[in-house]
Image 1 (tube, rainbow, N blue to C red):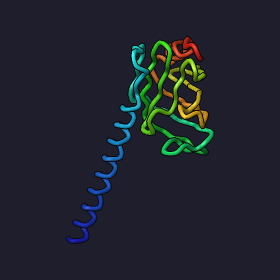
Image 2: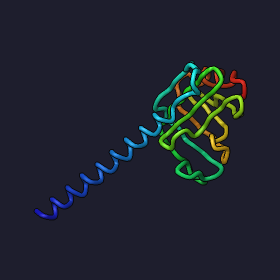
Image 3: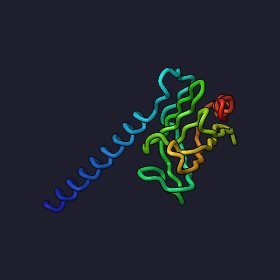
Length: 144
């Protein structure tokens, strides 16, 4: 009986730790998803499945040499694109930060650009409805 109770407590603790880490990642993604002040949101996509490839590991961010799979939030304004995940804001395209986007298949969007710190280049593959529309809208940005 004691062994079973110990096992159930251990499982409950692991479930609680997982829940807290997911809540923390969702809160971090939501805090990082904003455009510069005064810029209206033209397009928004929440909880989009993303595969993130990065050329250099970033502190508290995606690691190089592997694939990070996270839900992402995309915000597109008139002059900026912001992509945030559980790591925070990981990609930004704007007048001073060049980047590119292309549609590589049905519902497949690839965005390449620099981390906001400028220390790494990222390639993000997204599964998103209307990938063609997103690619065209991102390509119309001043820095794209």
